[in-house]
Length: 93
Image (cartoon, rainbow, N blue to C red):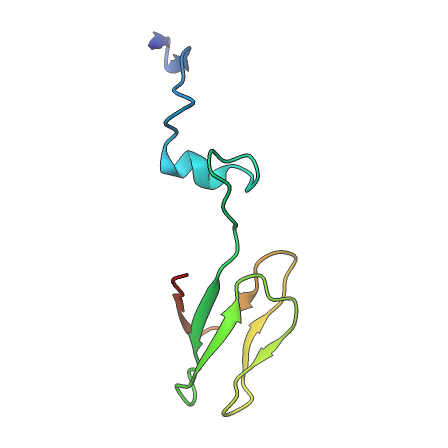
């Protein structure tokens, strides 16, 4: 049910059993309809030697390339920041 008041849409009724995927993604990991983590593992390809290293999305240490010791990602407060030029692929569980 939606009423239009002036230029704003006011939503009066909301389907709590069928939330949109975007809405679920924004919600806290414990408050989702089905609990799921925010973190994941990813394969990161080194821009120098093209070796692939598995990195945790919320890594708390600096991750170096096995082949050429290039820095692949830096830790931040939450997710790790990938170095420019690094390509990544999210791993499937």
